[in-house]
Length: 397
Image (tube, rainbow, N blue to C red; front, top):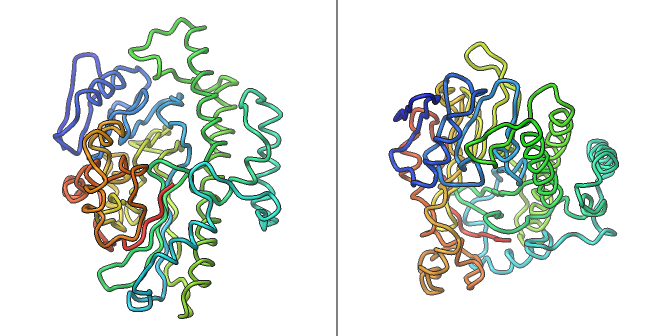
């Protein structure tokens, strides 16, 4: 861990010595905000520039939340389960299985047909829908359609979201997926980022970056945001749970070998805010591209679709607010990746993985990401590796 300390700012504690200049500027701006914990900002080894706050940062604040430091993909995170299947139970070609998953789980901008979706007459999911209707009534400026909440439940989205079949070191089969609160969470995030900017402007608060606009605890807008963001985080958990059900059904359609889930799902956010106690103080902790890693916590740290991924156990490092990285982290922008890499590069870097190999996913090429091995090496004091997974099938949005 290196510590960066500038006059008049809180310390920046980084689990990497490689921080791009644009990300470093964002971190220094953040460290000047007066309401942070004196322990400063924790920076994960997969850090890179984001909107306002970097991806790969952990912020602990007294009586305030920065909506842009949570981001617009509220509740984005990971889910993984281990199955009773072995590698030898999988067919030689995984193309038909990928086709089945892509048919059963909408990806990209696709959603479920309303008539087919809601097996969600489960009490928790009905409660989610009732709560959304109340939010939509109170905040019509969210500009989201009521129906999208139902039809997007159990959908992947695009970008770096994915569904994967993986093998661990003992050749056990795992399902792993990455997604968040979809369009509804995005609408909530954008709505309150603008509300925070309006509030700071109204109070004549000078900020080093307008995207660091914050909401003070005790204000009505703060309470509104906490209510909305907690809903989005719960929705994200349910979205991943529904997708996991759909993938299990897809496997049962295509595989001849009966199987069971042999390890409970690890379902963890890596873009979220929570009330936690650190250093004897109750603080609002924002993890943007980081997961909670208290002592004993199980988490998931994925690499790119051509690298390895890891099931980890937290060590409870207090200096990081009991956190660790959320993945490999991008080494370059999507635009730069499309300029630098070709379709043949994508094919070469995803050998052995059943996945899309077309021009529309070149920006997700493994070479556009940091080395997952270097990221893991930098956070040995934050987590220990429980399982190492290798992707054999990957579905991208």
